[in-house]
Image 1 (cartoon, each protein chain N blue to C red):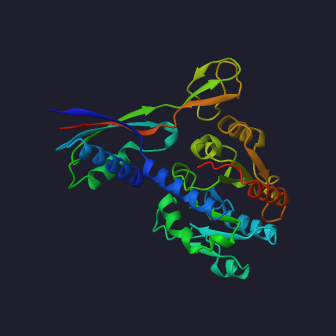
Image 2 (image 1 turned 30 degrees about the horizontal axis):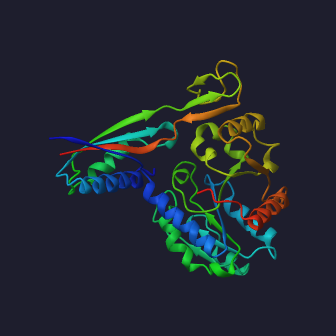
Image 3 (image 1 turned 135 degrees about the vertical axis):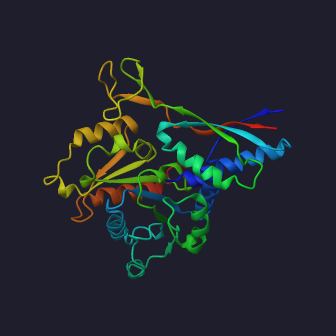
Length: 223
Length: 113
């Protein structure tokens, strides 16, 4: 006899539970954790390096590196005196909470204020997998085009801050900022947005100042 | 692209509930997946056939209920399925709208014997 068992459970609930444990570990160590997501080529690596430079002397930072192909070089992290741990995703298209749980103990969490997680370059999969960080950040970049909020709504909905990188290229590529911002506003009303150029440094101070405030005030978790 | 992880989670949840109910076999899995969740049915089915092999869920029918994206307009109250390229309210063109459906990614029930 066939019987129906009601479940009504989020398919990724096991990952969500692990994410909750991760944020408790970060909280217990007094560490603020952020997850940076973007498409391949959006400038994540350069952006993170410039962020680390801008925060030098203001916050003690560590990096969890999830992108094998375009990772921050170990030498660069070492040169900056940064504790870094690399996650071997083995070709996986996203990081998940279990990977963070395994990687985090490799960092000296007790001596850090901020952990930056660099997710795998992808606008689809990382949106579905909570990591257990305090805020999720998306880097959009001008050459990707102005239609990305419309094509990847799940990603644009799930972040607490949006970086618009490579604004120095605005004069050279077609990009309708109003159309882009309309899509963002629908999906994520009022999301804090930082137009920057990691290359020229434009806008990076405003972003760094905001991040320092977030870490100081320890904004509530959004896992 | 993340369907492998999604399918593994579906299997884990289904097996855990079937075990609790002392079921001999899982015959059906009823899934509710919103358009915004970016999950491709065919890929889930593909991984399902591989992952469920050797378990009591082997051969179970995967039933997908797809939920289209639905939005509600703050200005005129219209409820609509958005055009993928604008998201604006088709009645008043406002972009002050809210996503009300489409995020679903859940397992509603399983059929067992």
